[in-house]
Length: 165
Image (cartoon, rainbow, N blue to C red):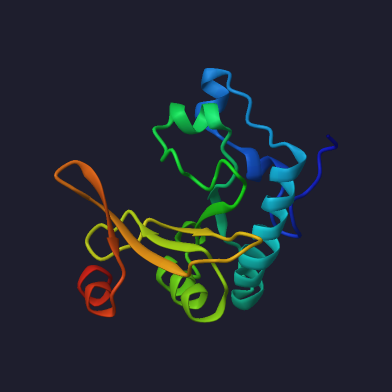
């Protein structure tokens, strides 16, 4: 498979980057079908967010091979394994904020799952967004740590105002 960019603003290296994979010698290269899923997500989620804000946004996780997903303790149903999900962090560059990214996606884009992740003291650590080529659920969740465990909770506007400042 020839090395190429996934989209205008996501390089091949960013899309498959994983310190854990490198450290443990785990292959993290998608097959052609998964690569097509990744391009679909990049074009229809990431690039639309990037164009809207006109500023860089860090991709913190995109593709994860099944072995890598197990090694990091990822969900057995993780859409990262299928190339259907990416995690992004606008706060890395200062703007747009993760809150702004979440609000833009939730109000303007088609998505399968949108998760506000790593909420601590009103701040969002990153945004997880997935997209399929089929029917998309438009499911929104919160993920935060409670008593040392990750908790997933269904989105409500009231809870959003309580958790995120």
